[in-house]
Length: 409
Image (cartoon, rainbow, N blue to C red):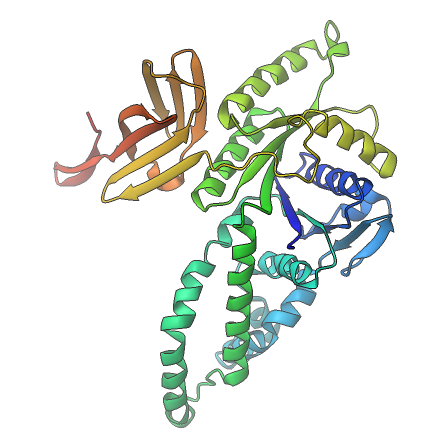
């Protein structure tokens, strides 16, 4: 059976690495053979576990293995032939070789190469649980949508591309002095695309894989988490929990931090409204750093004491995509799961990409994809436990020789 895979992501500085490591340790304590891997270029997994880690998994305690994936090593394995050819090509065109080499890796590819370790752990069959401490951004996961296009390209275009290059190679050498890619380059690209497609299928297997968002109770952090959540739904990745970290405890009421605690509690209500019915788990602000097994155990106990009844840290805590967004010819439709809401008066308010939805006494706040910034709400209704919201793109009219957008009535 394929291992259970849990990916943690969130804004930098929210304690994502600590939460990921605490989860992995909790799974290991339950007897599951677990590996926790960091793909963040600025690794802090070694600091969290208070031990030195390398690029290959090392057992740090019973049933728990850990590694800090080195992107440069993964690039050497998956991109060496392509990089060599591109470097020669750019150097021949006058760029300094060190600059040319830097330009041969597209932005974001280093983390994609690191994430290929997920596929290798799945193929190895050595682990029951794979926990991934991703870089502090949701963009990594959005990049993983491109294998759908790459798969089409490799099946439809790639055979013709090879034939054309084979025919053009003698002419290029004679007239253009242009080094064309050889078979090794094509083979490497084909292997890479195949691996990314396979990894994409692993990450979209909602019976075994989920993403968990980590945040602190700060409005800017929550907004980013909401945007990430929208994109995860948009690309078909399951979010089975969100973790609000570093909440001030009740003991601080009446003291210097009373106002801070009140603000945090207000923001916690926003999180619950934005992500419901996805479980919202919480962890307190501890009185010492979360470093080492003892503190990681405390963090894990605090987080997973709030899971649904009898759920273990490695379980799928929620199994439904609650948002579905489709866009077609100037209109867009949002389907939002609201299983506990009956028919009632619906209120909509959209400011930029933020939409506030009220149904009766229930309120939801969510972020739309950036491509819908010019769309306005055009209607809403409840169907079979789901709220349907229709949007329409602002119409373009010409005024004074200028092309402007007219808001939808």
